Length: 633
Image (tube, rainbow, N blue to C red; front, side, top):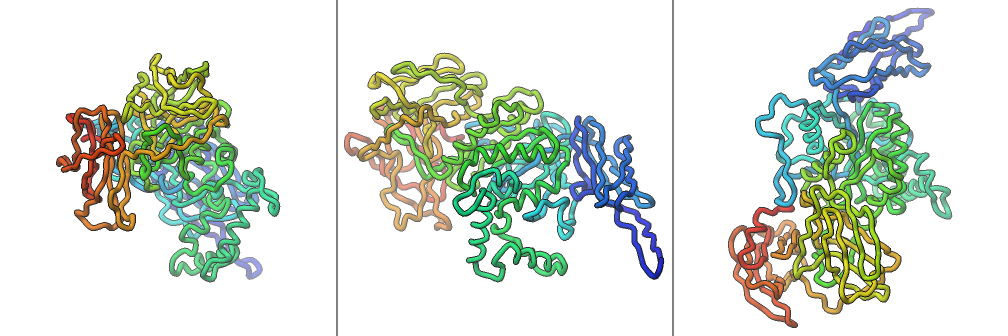
């Protein structure tokens, strides 16, 4: 920000008075992007009651600062402009300006580390691979306004003074190589809309949902016997945990004192580093969301849930977005993604449903959509199939693609297929269940898994369960049945820690996991279940199996050991379906030797793949080629 100021020094009765500094809110840095086609707030501070004139793109507006010095004007809606312009303000003899301001699309980026961790820009061999069209030139800018580690238990009007540095928006010219979800999201919006795209990058690693919510919103949720509401309960938990920690800071008040001292001295590192203070309830809402309101935005993209907290996440998510809209005074769009699957588990050969610690949160993330009661400006995208065991799953490019397509569909009137098939309607008729899906693209694709497994679990009212038979009825509908079941009381699809992915849309995205009539399901247990892949030797359990892909013609997995020696091998036993007429096993394009085994009428191979090597392919003879281009990690 440029400024030219004239300070008037008045010597009256031996007193000295200085004119207060005119300034914009910190969010307005050089290179900022303003939201097109809607009124845009511009605000800042000056002397109390001082007149302030603001000029931008041919508009000049005037206002007076309130008693606290706060002022705000509303620019009339503008069309996109990729040529930088000056945003200027004047109050009396003082002038300030922001350079190279663009007009385009602005999105808030919030949530935790999967919005910050990068992933490669590569083809996974399963979904459409997006790249900016070859030869594209003079593309509008993608710009990012990064935030500072602001935390507070009281709403902040602006970024704290000690963090008001490096306020320029950063231009992201090259969105290839390793990048986080929001950059891939912005690339597609820029390419498809041909306008500048700005990201208010507020996401913070390792943070819980409550940190992003206002005190009043958290107070609307119940507490426990000792605390009248959830805010008081969660705050007490955080204070108690901090009180037991090592070090000199034992409470939030201790932290505030240490932070104040740091702001004054700027010596050493900020005392709030780490995961403690950013996870206090409201800390990020007050420190990151509130100071940027009412900046003009089109919407928010959100990915969070690993850090909890437990409880009604779905209801809190709805309440959070609604409160943010109220704070910003804008009915903006909200798009969120589900958490990823768990590839240390593997698809079950026996009829089964399973889950792990992310399953409950995912159920809440999916259910939140229905709690918005038909709101046309909210949506989730299914990212379950993109993950692996690591919290920071690598398929950020495909995640960003899906979020961007959802935005194009919802916010920009460009119909897209952006997530896997989702249940739109269902009907139970005795021994048959009829299912209708949306998000099918050009039509449903049914691709059975190993042993012809459908991936649809059905159970009758006596607890007898089977993998259903699937009949594709039309481009968006199927029927489920099984000759052993005269009635079906419960149905689940994709309901496993690492499910069989058998029903996909035309873009290769598997169905969004679901269950129907969950209150009627009975727990079943398979005696001596057969695994697709099993360790024959794994001393100390140091090597981890990651199962990545399965279909009727074969499957893929890899072995990993953190800091393991290069070239190490591990002995594995892999399953071979009886229907296969032959088998081939390879790793890194090289055939692996194997020993054929038969156990309880099931066929297996004993192999020794390399640990921390490439994917292992186990396929019907002549079918390995199908899998060589697939790389889901």
